[in-house]
Every structure is written in C-alpha cells, then in structure tokens.
Length: 266
Image 1 (cartoon, rainbow, N blue to C red):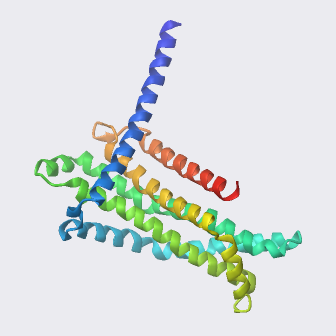
Image 2: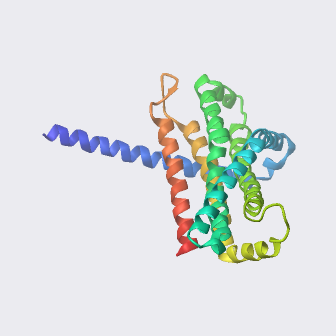
Image 3: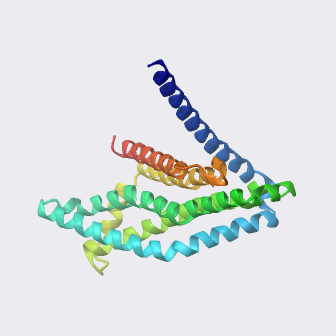
C-alpha cells in the first residue's frame, strides 16, 4: 500500500514538474522574443531578411484558402441566424447578432486555429527536426545566432499571419453579412454603419483587439516552444509531447475566449 501511494505521489510530482517546466519554457521563449524584437541588431538586413521571407511565405500560402473558407462560413452562419431570427419575430436584431457572432467571437478564433494548423505547428515540427538531426548543435557550435535566424522568424510569422487573417476575415464577414441581409444594394448602408458603430463601442473594440493579439501570441509561441524544447528519446520526441503542446495551446485560447465573453457581456 505504501509503495502504491509513493508511486502515485511520485507520478503527481513528475506531472506537476513537467507542467511547470513546459510553461516556464513558454514564458522564457516569449521573453526571449521580446528581447530580440527590442534589439536594434534584429532590424539589420541580415537578420531582417529571413523574418520578411518567412512572413511572406507563411501568409501568402494560406491567404486565398482562408478567405474562401471565411466567406463560406460567414454566408452559412448569416443565413442561419437571419432565418432563425425571422422565424421568432426578431428580424430587427438579426444583423446585430450576426456581427457579434462572426466578427467578435468566431472570426479571431478561426483565424488563430487556421494559422496554428497551417503555419506554426509545421514550423515547430521543422525546428524539432533540426534539433533531432543534430544540425542545431552543429550550427550553434559555429557561432550562429539560431534564436534570431530560425526561431524569431517563425514566431513573428505566426503573429503576422494570425493578425492579418483576422483583419481580412473581419472585412469578409462584414461584406458577406451585409450581402446576406440586404443583398446587392446600397439602400441598407446607412443603417448598417450605424448598427456597426453601436456594436463596436470603445470597450468592445478594446476587448476585440486584445483578444486577437493574445490569441496570436498563444498560437505563435506555444507550438514553437513545444518543438524547440521538447524532450527526446532516441532522437525522437517523447510520446504524447506534441499532444500536450496542442492541449496547452487550446487551453490558452479557451481562457482568452472566456475572458473576452466576460468583458463583452458582463
């Protein structure tokens, strides 16, 4: 019995230690990125070029696909909300509900998840393969600044892609919501802009900007930290470590979403 209790307490201790170590590495990487961003040497052409190349490569490759996906999602949700509101006699509130559901809640989260699946998680896998192959240690022994050349471009690219897709998808959502309600006419534009200004008051706008910014950081930092600092056995990542990184990322996104809901509606 004592051996079972001792084994259980040891497992709990190891689990708590691994969790604390994982979050410590995430915060350490975030602090390191901020230090590099504030460093003037980062903005020299030799260091800035890989960042710009990575930003263009990651964002341009997913821009068209996400725009089409966002337009389809917005059209479907707009139609569902409008038809449901009309059936319950709430047609005057239909457009406001569409804007709140799409722009305030769904679009930033969708953009963050899309960037995670298409950009930051594959970038983290690339870093993990560099570490596994021994290339990281070899280049580091030659004095190369790998945090600036390999890690920083991937993190900044994730941030840029997430913010860009969120901004683009908001425009797409506003256009598709207008077309879904009023059709191809400018008659409803005055009322639409007045309703938009009513929804996006200063407090809601601040919550929206903070939500998008924090979601972008979570998507950009957590997968990269998982791939960069993962434990390895026999030159491979420890089983379940990638899933743990994804679970941490989803947990952070969920907390950000809950905080934004509280800020908007409480």
